[in-house]
Image 1 (cartoon, rainbow, N blue to C red):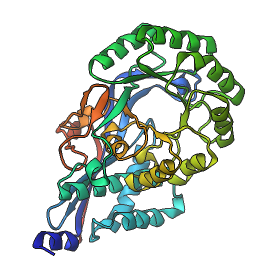
Image 2 (image 1 turned 120 degrees about the horizontal axis):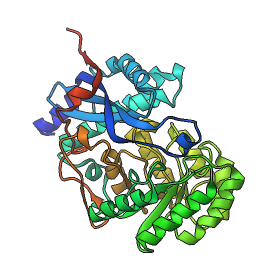
Image 3 (image 1 turned 60 degrees about the vertical axis):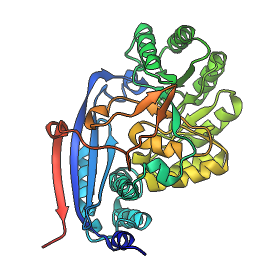
Image 4 (image 1 turned 90 degrees about the vertical axis):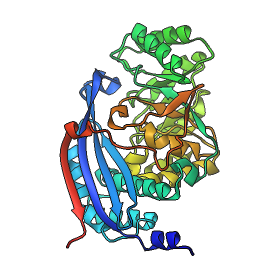
Amino acid sequence: MDTKQQTAFQDRIRQVTLTSINVPLNIAVSDAKVLTGRQKALTDVSLLIAEIDTDQGAYGLGFTYTLRVGAAAQMALAQEVAPLLIGEDPNDIARLWSKLVWASASVGRSGVATQAIAAFDTALWDLKSRRAGLPLAKLLGAYRNGVPCYNTSGGYLQASVEEITEAAAQSLAQGIGGIKMKVGHPDRSADLQRVAAVRQQLGDRVALMVDANQQWDRTTALRMGAALESFNLQWIEEPLDAYDIEGHAALAQALITPIGTGEMLTSAGEVERYIERGAVDLVMHDAPRIGGITPFLKVAALAESRGMMMAPHFVMEIHLHLAAAYPHETWVEHFEWLEPVFNERLNIHDGKMWIPDRPGLGLSLHERVAGWTQARKVIQQPT
C-alpha cells in the first residue's frame, strides 16, 4: 500500500459546515396542487448544503432540498446529528448513513430525518469520488456518458399553451430532448385540449410527458389515461395519490402508456414496495428525498433486477450521475432553478445531458449563495 492510499484509509472528518439557503425562482409556478387549493404557488427552493472537510484535506459537497416548508426542520435535525460525523472515516459511507438514521430513529426513518441525512450522504459520495479523481458517475460505473433529458420548468399550469410551446422551442434549441407539461386542471377537457395543442406544435418526434401531481382519483385517472393514449406520451406521471400502490398497479396494467411515480416518497422502502408490487413502469425516486445516494442505489438495484426504466425527479446536478450508472433506459429532468447556486453548468446537446469531466459532482458554490443564506453552522472537532 503506497503512502497516498494509507493517508486515505487513515483520514478522519474534522469539520462539517451546514448552510440553509432559499433560492428564488424567476417566476412563481403552479401545478395541479395549487389549482385545487392544496398548496400555494412555488416561489423559491430551499437547500440544505453540507460541506465536509477531513484531516488530510479532502472535501465533499452535498445538498438536499425542500419546497414551501420544512427548511428550518431539516437544518435543525442536521445540526443535531452532524457532530456524530466528527472523527469518523469518510470512506465508511454505508455505515455512517446507518449511524445517522438510527441516531434520529425516534422521529422516523423517512421524511425530514432522511432528507437531512441526504445532504451528508451526498457530500461523502462527492468526497470519495473527488479523492479518486473521477466524476461520481464514473466512480459508480457509468453505462453511458450522456443521458436523455427533458424539461419541466416551462410546462406548469399557470402558463398558457403559447407560453408552453415557446418554452419548449427554447428548450429544444438548447439541446434538450423532451418536454413535460403539467395536467390536473379541475376541468379535464382543458387538460386534453392543452396536451393536443402542445403535441401538434411539437410534432410526433419529440418526447412528450405529462404530470398530474397526484390530482386524479382512480376513475378519473383511468378515463384520462385512456383519452391520452392517442398522444404517444413517454409516460403519465403521478396520476394518483403517491401512496396508492394498488391504484397505480391497476392503472399500469390497464394502460399502454407507461406509468411513473416515486418523487413524493421519502424512504427507500416506500419506493421498493411499488417496484415489488409491479405498480409502476418507471421508477422516479429522488435521492435527496429518500436519504441520499446510498439508499438511491439500493432502489436502483431492485429496479434493475426488474428491467425497469428510471427517470429520477428534479436535482439534475445529482441525478445525472446516478442515471448514467443505471443499465436500463433512463431520463434526467432538466430544471434551471438551481443553476445560480453553482459556478458550473452542465453540458446539454443532442437531446442529452452529459457527465462533467470534473471529479465528484463537479460542482462548487457560487459567491451569491451568501446573499441567500438563512442559517449557517460549523461543527468541528472539540479542541
